[in-house]
Amino acid sequence: MKIGIDKLGFYAPHLYVDMNDLAKERGIDPGKFTIGLGQDEMAVPPVTQDPVSLAANAADQILDEEDKEKIDLVIFGTESGVDHSKSAAVYIHQLLGLNPRARSVELKQACYGATAGIQMAKGHIALHPDKKVLVLASDIARYGLNTPGESTQGAGAVAILVSASPRLLELESESTYYTEDIMDFWRPVYSTTAYVDGKYSNEQYIAFFQKVWKDYQEQTGRNLEDFAAIAFHLPYTKMGWKALRTVIEDASEEVQERLKNNYQISTKYNRNVGNIYTGSLYLSLISLLENQDELKEGDTIGLYSYGSGAVGEFFSGKLQPGYKKHLQTAEHQAMFANRECISVAAYEKVFEESLPTDGSEKQLNIDEDPAKICLAGVKDHIRSYAAK
Ligand code: COA
Image (cartoon, rainbow, N blue to C red; front, side, top):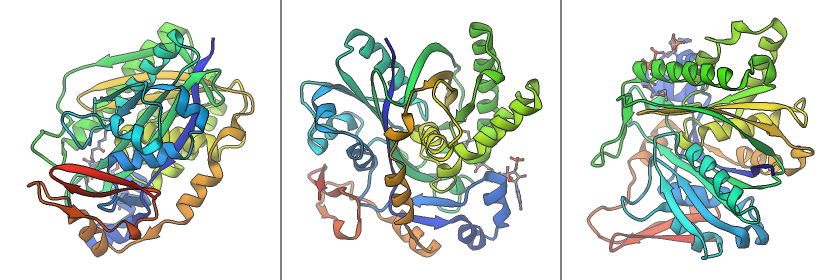
């Protein structure tokens, strides 16, 4: 039985800041951001979007009534969740009208959470082939104004429907993974922004890639030539290339060209959104599938997932016949075209807006947010959401 990704939805907030503007305001050469990091634009979440609403907007795009009835497991991968106890997945049922006869849970391991969710979804579908699993990857990446990590912030969500007989990508059973307790990036429970040892994090991302890629080669006998493309977790779009270039010379010129070209295509959306943590790898996959017309059914796509702290995994999937017809290309392009570029001063103002934490009430103005599903306010420590 084939099990894999049946549908992919993506949502980013409607506001963004141009990285050239941010660089100028911070007294930095814009080339550092646009070439050195490979980022052109950074999504800015208004206070009316949080990881729950972002994920609900991403999933709303792709789910039909049959999906809503058949989903009996919702897995929410996030490292910027809104509650230490209640899972973000539970909110989704009400917002999307899902069948309540389902399991719902939140998973956390930095940017790796959704990958764990997908692998668990695969096991669930193997036992219950008539069911579907909704995996959500949703985050707001916040390092703080004027910090070294500021240029690698972003916000967005990817919704992944996992089922039998998938229409996009069959997930193969070969997969290699690695865990080691390191402190490259973390966010203590009392902090609203992350702590990061940036250089160390870059090194570990590459070291974990080399380990799992070597294991994958040994386990499967495959080499780079067996892949049409490899998609990477992208905290910024240069990062995946830094890992790929350490192994690419093992391949022929032709294979190197193909992987390099497809890598560039796989970074297109991420360049204009920034880091979305858990969803970054899957945004890169969407970018590849929606913007590369030369991929064909049966092609193998490699995926490298990395979550600081840290866990890395290399796995793969096969493109399904007619997959192009089942992508949300037009919807995603319209979403990008309708976004609004804001000044750095406006971004700083939006960044500083937050919900009260003392139990006082705040109603938010959701009229200025074009998203269908918004965070509408908070009262008695309870968030309320509105679907327009
Ligand atoms: N034109 C072109 N490139 C330039 C440049 C310019 N004017 N100025 C600098 N650069 C390049 C640097 O050479 C460097 O390239 P390299 O990494 O290929 O050597 C790159 O821009 C970044 O410069 P650097 O000085 O290393 O930036 P930084 O000290 O501000 O740190 C991060 C960058 C990514 C480490 C930092 O933003 C961070 O900590 N981010 C969060 C953590 C993260 O994303 N981790 C990734 C693993 S999950």
